[in-house]
Length: 354
Ligand code: NAD
Ligand code: TYD
View 1 (spheres, rainbow, N blue to C red):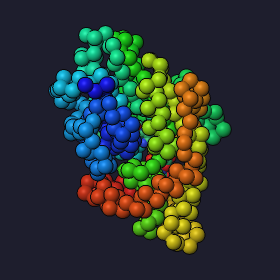
View 2: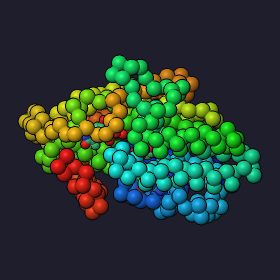
View 3: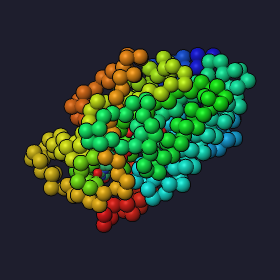
View 4: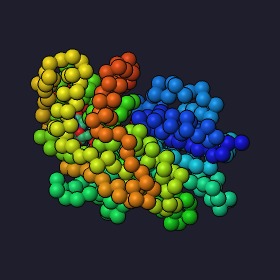
């Protein structure tokens, strides 16, 4: 009998696949069930190395589908949920907000309701619903305007962040109303292998390689706080095991970069690894119309997580970004596979003529 039966949703996506691998390898006594709809962003190639592990099961399904969820809880005795499944790209949310409400809000609520139905009868003994969220729910900071903390008010601006904010509120409401044991973390921008190449870093690495334009929104002055994906995963592990029920933890890299500066850094390392002359790809930078409602700055103060749970990121940015770029340059097949088909059409629609 497994020590824990953990349902990880969205485990075939970027962060989810790193999390699933980490848990499957680190905790052989846990049974890990990965539920993923395999949207354009989900890819089982990401988990090829562990697909036959004895403590791992993949289930293709939608978190909005109550019957699928009920069967899973029933069959596998799910006692913990780590919920990552979501629509995650801000630009897509601008074009199609409803899809974000369906998965991020209705999907989260459906999952909460099924968990409640199965767990309430045991008084939630030994149960945990862990909701993985984003710092974007807090809105935008001024360039010199402090940091996001667990006490910040919610002020989402994009349909993506509004849908994640809504899901956070529903998760908290299940704690307040039904006493469901929950924990939430809000993390800054992640980077690393297996991120879908519509997000800044993988998109730009792939474009540099193919000598395609690099569409910088606005003047490239927006600031993001970047964290290597494995450091996010180690924080989730710590919060899952040691976090206080009902609490929120902010996770960040203390690693703020203006977009244009991180882009120049990515160009410099990618050119070096491709054997190009230093700065050869700077000419690919193209300033394009800004994203509507583009948040100026995100930055996290993760003192609570450090002080209370002893978390520290293990990657310096220099090491992380080099490892990340090397991975994309060595995995062109993966990039080609995920950028074919539907994504190609989407890419043409979003970026052509921008
Ligand atoms: P991703 O887009 O790479 O992956 C999302 C996964 O969810 C995909 O595998 C997709 O197939 C799956 N999915 C989508 N809709 C589904 C549905 N209805 N049912 C089941 N599965 C579904 O996302 P990511 O970047 O890995 O983000 C994962 C989570 O972490 C999200 O909740 C996101 O809000 C949060 N987050 C991401 C970042 C970041 O920088 N990427 C930062 C902070 C928080
Ligand atoms: P992104 O990776 O989409 O993450 P998020 O919007 O969730 O922070 O974008 C990171 C930053 O890079 C953001 O300020 C928007 C900007 N950006 C560009 O300038 N050009 C691009 O093509 C993309 C995808 C993003």
